[in-house]
Amino acid sequence: QVQLVESGGGMVQAGGSLRLSCAASGRTFSNYRMGWFRQTPGKERAFVAGISSSGGNTYYVDSVKGRFTTSRDNAKNTVYLQMDSLKPEDTAVYYCAASRRVVPTTSPRNFDYWGQGTQVTVSS
Image (tube, rainbow, N blue to C red; front, top):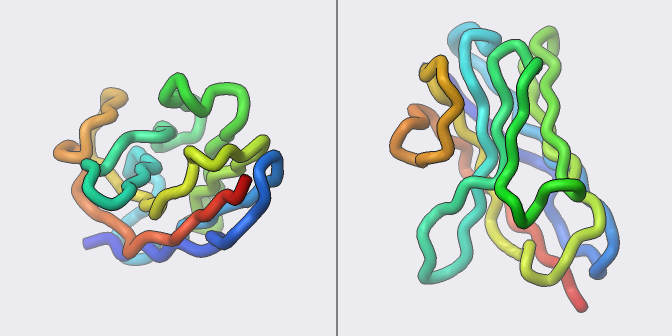
């Protein structure tokens, strides 16, 4: 079992930045691929960014490439999502998730553990 707790959400104006953190506890964090997802009311949870267990490989949905950066510190059992140049359409609840899959995956079904989510609101 892995417990995940997100923090760092809030309200920001368009063009601003936020840094989300996701702290993990339980089983060995460095064994898990991590992902970030977001969800708005009435829509399915959507992939935003992923990072390999070592942190050596990252991948992003096209809409955030060049603006968002995910990283991890396995010594601190924490994964981060740096969000720059935020847009109103980035407004959502953001979730971190852990996957035991070795290959990169963007499907929520392939992630085994989830945090509770943190709200990000970008005003125009």
